[in-house]
Length: 263
Image 1 (cartoon, rainbow, N blue to C red):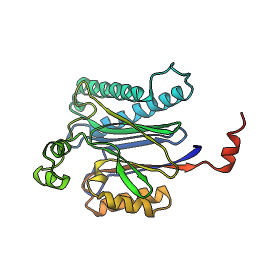
Image 2 (cartoon, helix red, strand yellow):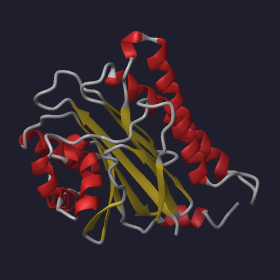
Image 3 (spheres, rainbow, N blue to C red):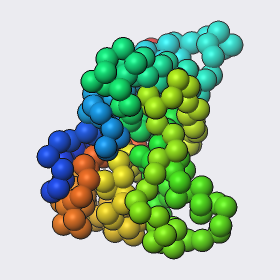
């Protein structure tokens, strides 16, 4: 399948917090995105999220270019590259916290991805999420690294029941929190019309999946959808920073397909 890519991003401090500890960046030419949510209540969460985004944006761009030019068997699989990039990023943030008392205890979630051929490859740590909207159906592709998720798996209760018993969500994995971290990696086969949403919990905690789905289906332009989702999260309380990336897979234009037949 020949396709083109549309990307849009947005971030907002919300209505309660003075500081925005989220950080988000995109590389439209490569189909690369990175979103990080600095840990609330930790020192220098905004530093940790910025470090994660800057490091991983460069690392994933380099990985994309390397694998795009690879010869069969010469380069490690893309998911191994994603795993390695995140573990190196974790070490950098952890060491920064050890060197400077101002940054001690800082941490961040992360979710990042890159497009390569017919796949979206992604990696995440924490409770920032990646969703896919396909044929009107919204599906969460990542699984939160959180106490709530662990209790859901152990007890069989619904998310609403577990959330009612826990005073706020507790992340069980984060970049910079420990010397080592185990990121989760995955991939998703692309179809024309797919729309991917990457977001911090400032969005996913405020809006139901159905509210998100309805907005994504109803908004034609990605910038408008980004703006509308942020507005909805703020109207629902805006207690946390709100950040998101939207990535749409579009059929390639006729001119692009014709050019593809020529060297």
